[in-house]
Length: 363
Image (cartoon, rainbow, N blue to C red; front, top):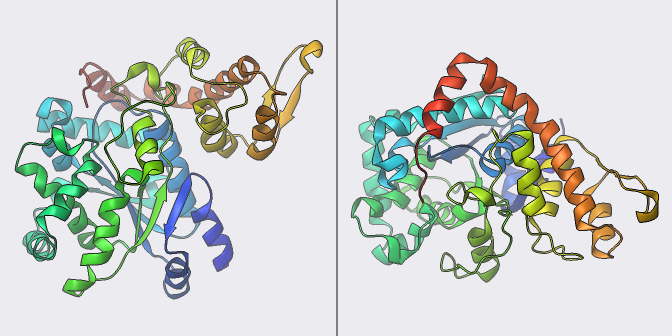
């Protein structure tokens, strides 16, 4: 595969930003199998964003010739008080995540799964951690703490200060040429680019993907980023801690229909529309088309083969939100059905799912 095709795969939605495209091209020209990684705090059930969207982007990276490392950040989940701060339960949730990614289409035979609890056993991990920490001001580290999904005012434990420098350390101990995480992790990835070379390490290419909007639509939160556009994206993102804002990969056909029916979808609004986001980042990446069924008096049936055409029709008011929602629910259920079957038929996956779903989820 030539360089331009590989860049196209890495750049396509849900990718939102590459820092920098020039460096990515140079990397692909000099390395046939660059290492890319994405890290996950094991916490709660996977949803469209943490499951399907991440799987879609991960497969893009694999097809582009990257050697991908899935990083199960169990210690990070412990620092962030996920799953009630129960480290054993966090690890069980990590195993559930692996089953979820498989069900969502990740070819785990072409990925390397690394656990944080294994990586930190290497004494050189902590040497790198200290070296990077000495090149980072306390103020800068505190500013990065929003990568935990919490505002600065919510943070009170000394262990939480370890989080951003540990994440920078991961990049270099995993030998990652590319960091492929969500836009909410951009701040720490940029920090790694700045401080890595100061201790004789490399400057990783940052490939950041879009954060799927929650079904509730725009929310008045903020306080995560100085950049207003990014702050909104983090505030609006789909979250398992707000059940009706998110579609779990396990939701039944009826649950999906009900959640989509109640979702925010303002007519002609294409900027803050979670239903359109599901079309752009999930449906058109998995199915490549969206069929709208409606009565002749409302325009009759129509099939869209690309997101741009759908968005234009909606913006012009030629497509009613209810017709769009019905079609999106149908398409999502088709996409989710094999995932439901995996967790129903695979005994290991089913057992892990049953254990994780019993835990009350909090931020």
